Amino acid sequence: MARILLGVSGGIAAYKTLEFTRLAIKAGHVVRVVQTPDSEHFVGRSSYEGITGAPVLINQFEADPAGGVFQDQERPAHDPIAHLELVANCDVYLLAPASANTIAKVSAGMADNMVTALALTCRKPLIVAPAMNNDMYLSAATRENIETLRRRGVTVLDPGTGELASKGEYGVGRLPEPQELLDAVERAIAGGAEYAPRSLDGLKLLVSAGGTREPIDEVRFVGNRSSGKMGFAIADQAAARGAEVTVVAANVALARNPAVSYVNVSTAAELEAAVREHFIATDALIMAAAVADFTPAAPSEGKIKKAGREGMEIELVATNDVLKGLKDLRREGQVVVGFAAEAGEALLPEAQRKLESKGLDMIVANDIADPTIGFEVDANQVTLITAGGEPERPPRGTKSQIASVILDRVEALLRPAASQSAAEGSRRV
Ligand SMILES: Cc1cc2nc3c(=O)[nH]c(=O)nc-3n(C[C@H](O)[C@H](O)[C@H](O)COP(=O)(O)O)c2cc1C
Image 1 (cartoon, protein in one colour):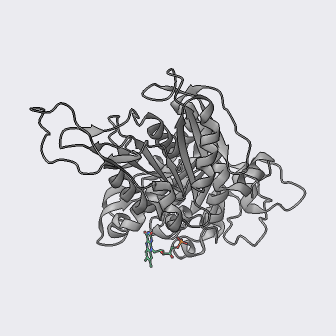
Image 2: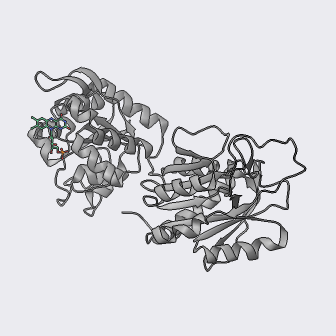
Image 3: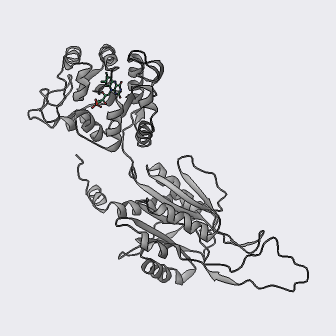
């Protein structure tokens, strides 16, 4: 037996959820129903009340006559706030039919009626069953809203294709049949997963990774040993935490993650241009790439010939400092993290100097004197220095583990107030 909360929004297919409710009760579950005000144009509350034997909630400012509990639970002595109590008591929240409008609101985090407020408060498995006209479903807005929900861990059921509920309509957008809805609900309950929005949901991260190559001629270059593993590990972790991640990848020969966008570059100038282009829209920039400090002043066309040469000199000129150059573009609230690779005792003073001179929020210092960490290998050990904070040295770990620590600090920098309250274990409403 499960406690199923059903949220009904305004679509013609709402009629199918009467049958779903009946089937669910027949299968031994307990069902409570909430509706959007517009959904009452399609199916009135009395039908659900008759089938479930419990009041249907539509107005979030009215107390729940049933005290926020399901039919098998004891009513509390006080009148709780219904949208908090109902989701706390349910095992699963099914939004069916989910109109394009309600999907848009839920993906934007709105809570302007009972159905959307419950979705925003929900920490139980949340299932969304879109049902709408073919064009509404295929519109870019709806597709993106559904994608956003999926990224956050919401189960969005694929609608069926064929005749739609409204007369003469055909295409994709049909609400799954009542038994299919029940199967989806039972699968979600069996999985036992809690629906938890991920910690970087809604945020954009820009990561630079790899090492630049500055051409001497069309064959040779001045490069460095950075493999891109650290930057890619940060990007993978950030995507797993829900961020929209763009990686500016300089000569990285590693597998790409389909959840991440990549911009491939080669030289320091190309990397700078790509970072500047994407920086404006980003919430946090993590500059893990090793960017050349110098570039040949006049790269030769073709391949420089050896014949007749005793040796050669290459004149190098300084490249732009990418991080310093971003100061003029920087918005308030943007977090910027740099990396410093230095050997031995020079590491921390040099990292501190870079942190201050480049106006960074945090710098990740790598000691390149230790061959077992850093370049090309999977392990790493870093020191993290934040502006005004004490240096922190997390334990040595895989690049993935170090990426996780770096992102924890980035999250704290992005959301100082939220991190504080999470640390205090405060209750979310
Ligand atoms: C006859 C009619 C049928 C509709 N059918 C649907 C539908 O199947 N799916 C949908 O997303 N919107 C449909 N709409 C539009 C929604 O009802 C409208 O966007 C409404 O504001 C949704 O509000 P809600 O999301 O708060 O329930 C329909 C509108 C009308 C007038």
